[in-house]
Length: 418
Ligand code: UD1
Image (cartoon, rainbow, N blue to C red; front, top):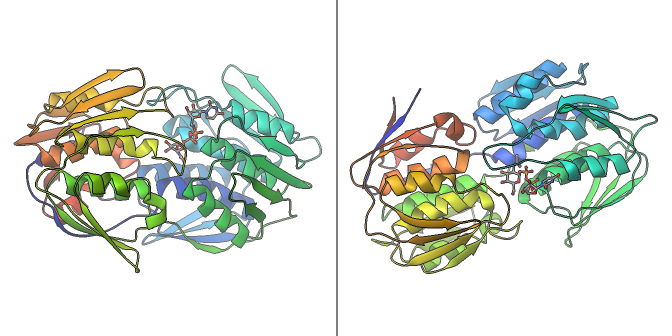
């Protein structure tokens, strides 16, 4: 098994370009099958979650070709409507193919995503909404067998929680449905806006209203298009945290300020000076030691993202002050805490609350990534720690970070994969 070896306490300085957003590319690739045409997706991150999604596309009958960071998907010959268990198990967000398959094939057979490293992963909101649209869902022993009798029909769906995945699945199912679908209390994450922008370029008629309502007027078919995926806001925040813990000075290119507006004040309060230029580039200059006395609550967008909780917590472990985190989205999202403790952090967890008393310095140790963003927090902490940190569990990090160690090395980190 590979590990990252980090010799910490080195100042980061230099320039990085932010990869395309993982949470945009996955639903966009699923949406490509509805086009039954050729789509060219630029700024596609080369991460393992994309590799698994490509395996699903190929299994369904799509042709895929990478040209650098552009992925060409030809879905003209899609002929299957099932996803085998081994692919569903490789990536739980494959559930996003449910809405796309019932939209274009009228049928879908796949297994339930089950629990995952962040806690239980129910899809009741996805299924309730799809049933309202006329989908017949047979659930048995963890398998889903879904079909429509005479196509899906538009309706009004009020989500009890603004689930990202449910919103995406319902949008995908509604595109070719008869009539108009109105989703209220929909998720408003930037990646959902990116998905709807892509779909509208393909001929869909989707309007995102500012008040969490999404209106989808059904159309008879879609066509192919070219699209550039938005920058990954969680990767941006991870590199900002890496700057903050190393007294660093980083220029991050390809950043959308409005998508990280809940995180910028946190770094500013920690003493970082942030300048954003018109050309979508962000400069972060960090103090010798960050200071922080604050409560951070994870919330649906535009609140502070649950995915950024772990990397930002890594920053607070060495900040001067006491911070409190309240994790409101997932029930099991503090797995990185035990590993941060091995590096000398002072953190107490009770249920959804974590209290971090900043220590002057961390010291290197052997740690294990338990999930994607928790793994990123260990890399951030390792960059600041004195001595050598060894991070295992890289399969988690590779799901979402493109060229992580090469990027960090290029700005002065001592980090290598063995
Ligand atoms: C997506 C993101 C993930 C991010 C999360 C929250 C992708 C590929 N993943 O995950 O990185 O952390 O949004 O911003 O985009 N829930 C239910 N019933 C449902 C659906 C969800 O109870 O039918 C609960 C979940 O268990 C969780 C919460 O709602 O506690 C949020 O889940 P959701 O917004 O659906 O997250 P995902 O789409 O899975």
